[in-house]
Image 1 (cartoon, rainbow over the protein chains, first blue to last red):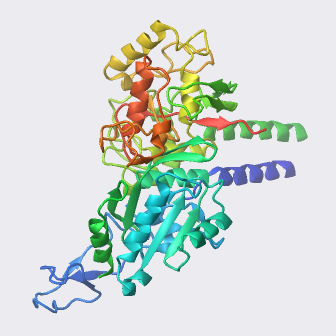
Image 2 (cartoon, helix red, strand yellow):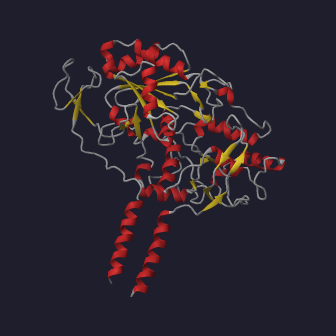
Image 3 (cartoon, each protein chain N blue to C red):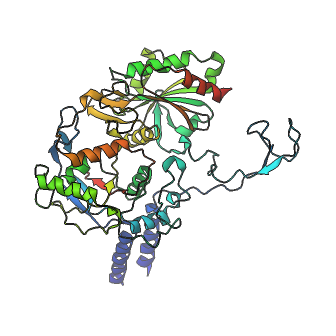
Length: 238
Length: 257
């Protein structure tokens, strides 16, 4: 009877392994929160019942759990922090996007061997960075993602960063996997195509994400007026 | 006793395969070099050997998938990965509407969902070049694009309404043994976002060097291939979270050597 038992065990483990992604259990236990019915302080919430500091109305209990907040990390459904792909930084650290939570993200997709639009896109990024007040920079992360993960290794990204004087804390360069890059490009609505082993054709889009990872602004084109982009960044760090 | 054990092992293995390989099988495609409508700078692209699903993924197969992977159910899918019409023809998280045919291709599917479905079976979505390579075959030749009647046939299928409600496998298979690449639904491809013609209504010009770096290198090779033009235009206008009534998918598996 022994082999039977082993076979059954083998079968069961086989089943387990084939269940490719185990779905995270929803965290439904959320603390009850209270909010001013007049939203005097915008979205400010309180953990206990009481009165609003401004209009003195009774706070009302609000139900925070439904639509947006679904998982343990309290990120909304539209957040890019839901993506689970791994990336290498120019410092050769492996990260997931959710580790960038808490900072406003300004993101662009480029590749370092590009001679056409990318230098101008990179210039646009530097331009935006230069126009933001110094005391806000610590709350911002400027992220340049390579669409050419085979060529753009962490070492190469690092030397690109140094060459372009973008080696400060606020700059980050990412190398992903081919499928991770394709997926992220889709999140940014960026289109790209390899047209030869060293050249890509791609959309010129700079995207701004709030500290919760939700897309709040996109700037399309090269050398366009970046006033709106800057305004939207400043709004998130006020 | 041992004999019985082996028999049981065999039966269990069969059950296991049936339970998890949801596609009704794949066929082997021998790779080659060819000229697609939109190629790279040299216009010729190389397709490596791969296997492709004989049929598009059906409603019934997708039902099994969401049962096993609840995060892709209609009410649970993240907004990042879908729009409002995701699985719009389903009555609940796990059931099709009664009017729908389980043997029709699954549609109202986003790119993320299609990608996840394939990855869960250790497959992936086909690239545009792979898909077009298999789809240029008719019943007798591997490259039927030169035959005017082949293009005409495809275009007449594109005109037929509600073709997504038809059952898979009723049209003749092509020379590779693959069914329904034309005639039922459009299909997602892995790199659909590599189509840089701007059907995406940002600016209706072909080579906008402001929006696309290096776009001048991209030109169509065969101005008479209307059917292919339509496919590329659709791909160019899609976003990954879109779900559409006439857009389904199938998976491929690269051959590991």
